[in-house]
Length: 116
Image (cartoon, rainbow, N blue to C red; front, side, top):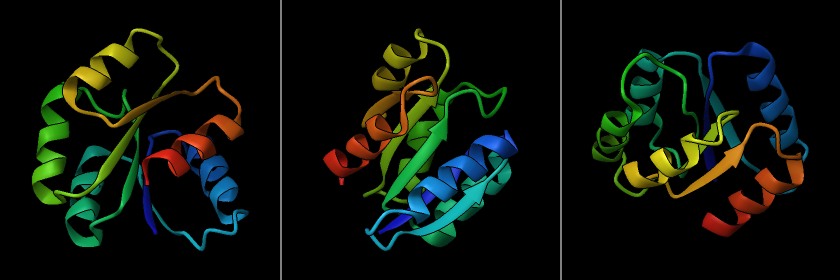
């Protein structure tokens, strides 16, 4: 399973990468730290799952989700944010799931298992 992590905070990227590498799921993991690298890697990698920081860009993420789906039509998108208001916006925009950045790692892993 290919997972792309898109977050502009290096500590979050590293923590998520370490967490996923510790799993037995044999994930192929890549990362994007800005909108340009996100769109490029989605198109090239065609990841199965995208862990998307909802505040990654100044762009309206509701416009970005359809663009991502055009580049990789079968992608599953997990929106992540510290803002509770982001959940309804992300789901309305077409994200498959939402995880608060304040949730424990088990929540993220369970969401990944649920949507794959």
